[in-house]
Length: 337
Image 1 (cartoon, rainbow, N blue to C red):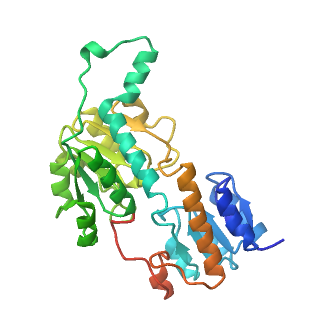
Image 2: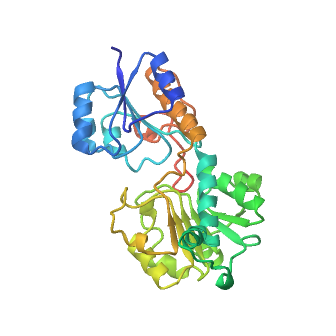
Image 3: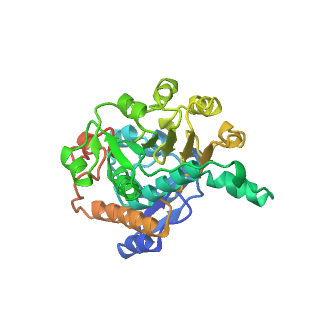
């Protein structure tokens, strides 16, 4: 039996499995969202040299029982479910598959926007229940609206491309982004988050979850938003103060929200979001398409294989590289998505 690569999930794209097996590694799968106790038992028993992080957390306790662990590869871009500081303390690089699922997540952001604006879920349900709500229905046209993107990384860039195809004007706030990227996508740069929230009837979140961005959307920021505003989040649930959003939706201070991610996943069965007809919810599957899974899986697996073989990784792949003295990713608080 070869060295093992632990997958924190029940599957990996076949092409990604081939990347691992062709390099002589054996993938070992965990149940989805396995807790730390279960993960520790697998790490202790299988002694993986690498972990591909899909679902659930990788806490400091995991690194303490895995002296043989040499790399953690995120199946995606958001590393808030990985204790990166602990990984750095143990000399373990954390790498990401940046941009590989950008198109799929951008498509999902637009799908959520249209579902909320056109009230697709509510109209489908009412028709199935025998009602014909056409006489009293008044829809919303999105062409000519303005969408504000919070951060302007790979996913936001693809979202801008799709939105502009629907004649939606796009602006973005990203204090760390390159002016040339804004120019390439024909997106105007705004100077402040507050200005974006006040001006845009559509707000879409695309920044990573950090201590600086946690609860970025809170009572104060929601108070700045327009009464016709729609909030879209395909990034990380912790960006939003959920009780504050529930309150704003209930008071009709904003028009609606489309959410693919939550502060705690999965959310509790009694979460207040489920009682609101002004929010459309999906279970963090924006990047879960056949095409994106293959691209992300292959990139995550190839990163593991290349690193363990001593090959250089492309610039920006190692998120804790600066602490480890390796090629770090750009220090950008707002452009992962």
